[in-house]
Each structure stands twice: as C-alpha cells, then as structure tokens.
Length: 250
Image 1 (spheres, rainbow, N blue to C red):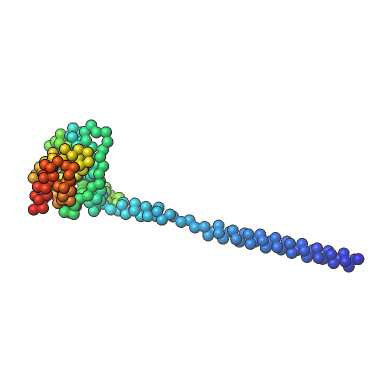
Image 2: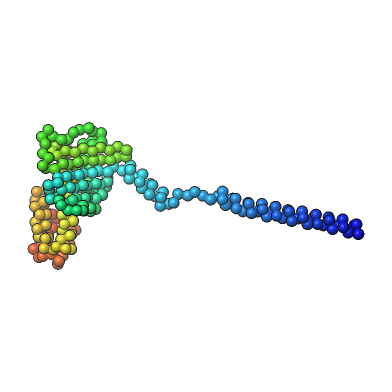
C-alpha cells in the first residue's frame, strides 16, 4: 500500500511538471509569434505623398515668371500671367464691375517664349536692383508689375512708365500675349453663346494683327481654321476668319 501511494505521488508530480512545461512552451510560442510581427511593422511613406513631395521640390527649383497689370478704370481692369520655364501656366483677368475673375490656361509659343526668356535674361532680374520707373509718372496708364521666383530667390518690381528698353519690351511681350489669350477666350465664348458677336471680335483681331499686337499669330491658325468652317457663326465672320488665315499663313 505504501509503495502504491509513493508511486501515485511520483506520477502526480511528473504530470504537474509536464503541464507546467507545456504552458511555458505555449507562452513562449505566443510571444515569439506576436513580437516579431510587431517589430517588423514598417513605417512606409505612401507613394502618392512621396511623388507629391518630389513634385513640390521640382516646382520650387524651377524658375517661375509673373506679369501683372492693374488699372481699375479700364474695361479689363486687372491682368495676371504666371508661367514656368516652358511657357505654360495660367492667365487671370478681371473686367470692371464683374464679380468674378476669369482664369484660363496659358501657353507661350516657342518663338514667344524665346523672346520673353531672353528679355528676362537681359534684365538680369534677380541680380539687379534697378528701379525701372521713369522720372515722369503716368498712373492713368496703369501699373505694371514684374515678379520672378527661382528657388529661394525672388524679386518684385512695379512701375507705370519706364525708359528701360528691355523692361519696356518685356511688358509689351506680355501685353501682346494677354490680348491674344483674351481673344481666344472671347471668340470661344461667342461661338457657344453669342455667335452674332463674332464679326466684331474678328475685326478686333484684324486690328491687333495689323499693328503687331499679337504674341504669335501662327499660334491661332488651328482656331481660325475651325472658325472658317463653323456654321454657328454668321457668314461674314467665317469669311473674315478665312481672310485672316491666309494673311497669317503668308
């Protein structure tokens, strides 16, 4: 009887040791199965965020050019052009008494961009402290503003009249580009909503062409071809578009 009791105790102790060992092994497995996953969890920047960051950095390191004109009493009272080194950007213009500004895509043609870039370079704009305002003031003609950003450097200057040849030429280039862009906007609006206004708009375009008031007339060739065959427009407007087309193609 004593032998049996001792044997039972030994078996009970062995069983308890096995259970304790199994519980410890299970705890270790559970810990080792969770902890590495927690440690390996990566902190990854989303691809879209990284791409946006790279785009912002590239934009910051690319020169950007701005031209602005303001004269509250003019029919077109405010014009702003901004573009990158490739000549692409946007134009904003406001009409007197209109509640909202009009914003349109903007693009200089390669010949126009070459002229504009050359004039910015001739001014050495960011390296210069030149005051382009002439001694005589002509505020009734409106205020012009030039602004350039290149990386961490930027500069703004404004004047209403200048005798600096390069500054004056640059202002004229932007004025011609603005007039051309506004014609494109107005004729497209006329085609959709007011076809009877198109003859007057084409007469104005003819006047701009005659006095060298367009940035690059050849940039308008595709549009004029469309106008020449657009049956929504009066015949007089279509014929006028055809004459302008031939004049520019020469």
